[in-house]
Length: 184
Image (cartoon, rainbow, N blue to C red; front, side, top):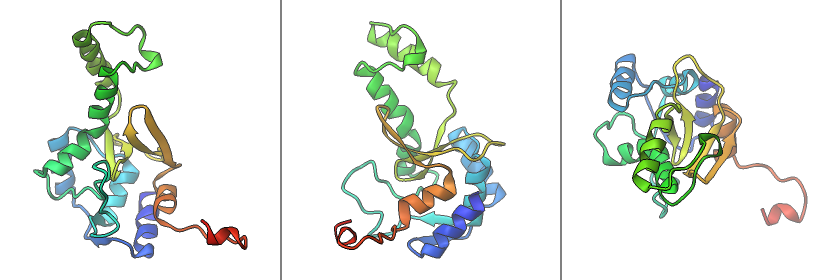
């Protein structure tokens, strides 16, 4: 799936694609951020590393970081993008949100955040694919849906898997219905 996704992205010719990540680079990234890429995400980045492109990746909303540049491990932007799912979850929990499967919500904010951090430690880390689109970490796993995580309370599926996501995010659909195609 990862190789198919990389092929689809390359065919669209919308983004600069650098040579893929090496095994040594994967080791550095995974040590630095404390996760392992899912197998399809790893295959995608081995086939080629998409990088930020002026124009399509420019966006006034901070949640749109473009492609993560995994070769700039000390970048504050990359760290922010990696941290975003946990940061936004904790922000929403601080504001009173509490996941239904977590049992009783502590009333005391300090205890609530401490409990949330303990429970979040058992959740697979989310790894940025593009902007605020994420796949779960996990060597030996693949085929997960790509999630758009704008907030904990604003999370939607953007693709059934990585290849489907590339089509959904970057391929313009062909509208065949007269009149309506002029307004899509």
